[in-house]
Amino acid sequence: MTDDRLLTGKRRKEDQDQSLRPQLLSQVIGQERVVENLKILVSAAKARKEPLDHILFYGPPGIGKTTLSTVMGKEMGVNVRPTAGPAIERAGDLAAILTHLREGDILFIDEIHRLGKAVGEILYPAMEDFVLDIVVGKGPAAKNVRLNLPRFTVIGATTRLALLSSALRSRFGAIYRLDFYSLEAMNLIVKRAAEMLRIPTDEGGASEIASRARGTPRIALRLLKRVRDFAQVRGDGTITRPIADEALDLLNVDHLGLDDIDRRVLISIIEKGGGPIGLETIAAAISEESDTIMDVCEPYLIQLGFLDRTPRGRTVTRKAYDHLKIPYNGRDDQTSTEQNPLF
Image (cartoon, rainbow, N blue to C red; front, side, top):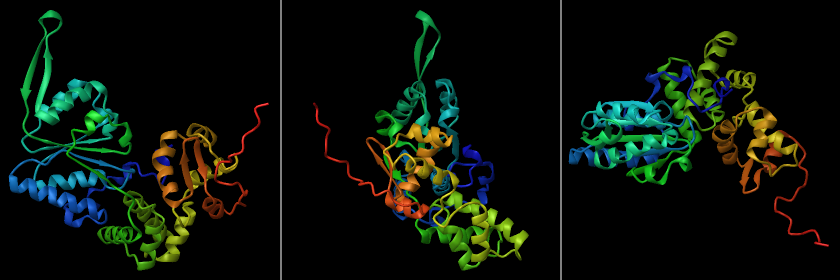
């Protein structure tokens, strides 16, 4: 289901255009605080002629974790060996990857929170002491062999920082959170992509796409391509504000960047009194995966102030009622202090 959703931050096949990604830190738009820290990290490592310290990026999908990892490789002039947590099923898989690394190489592990426990036990000493402990043989004849590894850098990316073990998290010397992008940054990203793709776009058209992209560059680039198609078929090929507005309305993306799944999440909670309601109940009510709701829908709805997470479950705020044009039920958001008598 997630792959078919236009506004998902998760990577789809159509998002593989590497030419649209920045190649150097100076070309990165937004995330100013993180970029400034990374520039210092790179300059210091180059001055000492050492590999980068291990880096962990976390935040919602589609906001540049993979891109920044590639940029770090370009800045250091080293190879980036990409892999993903689910792809490393056995300790032997990781051992094979580690033994093929060269001095200074970057091992990029996407979805690092999905690494298995046995794989993690191999990765810990590799990151800390640059050694690989393997067992040769079986039974009483088995013996432990320690191999020295070249100094390398692990860059991890995750949308679920809480699922990383404290042991793995402590191995990273630099941990950065990537946030949703500001509207100004999104405008610049859309304009840059339109220029690189040679799509005629005026100020109003770029602004309309940027405002509906949920602060996520990956979604902005996806919307730009869909609006380009609309402009070619229904217009003269130029993306203007009216063209972008009509195209995005046809795609069921409203002016705040909410789509049908977002609205169904909010309405399902409203239909049950506005909450609190559990995540699994919401997922069952709208026939969607709970991970999709938690990773893709909730972060943006919470940022807009439409949704609150409480110990008892999710609740919808009055702002969501107003946006959906549903009469507010007058429920007091504060939990009542009155209790039923015991007898």
